[in-house]
Length: 72
Figure 1 (cartoon, rainbow, N blue to C red):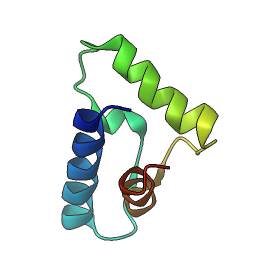
Figure 2: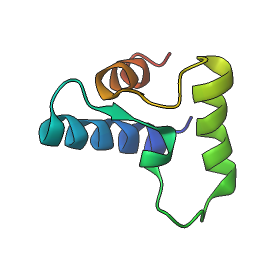
Figure 3: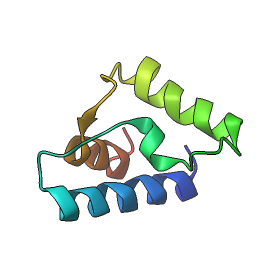
C-alpha cells in the first residue's frame, strides 16, 4: 500500500480509538468515503486485509494501526 493510504489508516484508527477506546473495531471500508472514487486503491486495501492477513471483517483499530506502522 502507498504511504498516503497508510497514513489515512493510522489517522482513522487514532480517531476511532480516541472516540471509543482501545477496544473499538474497524472495517477496511472505514478508510474510504461512502462514494467509491478509487476502486483500485479499495481493492489494494481489501487484498491486504482479506488475502494477505486473513483478517475478519471487523478488527481492533489498535491491531490494524500496529500492522500498518510495522509495514506488515
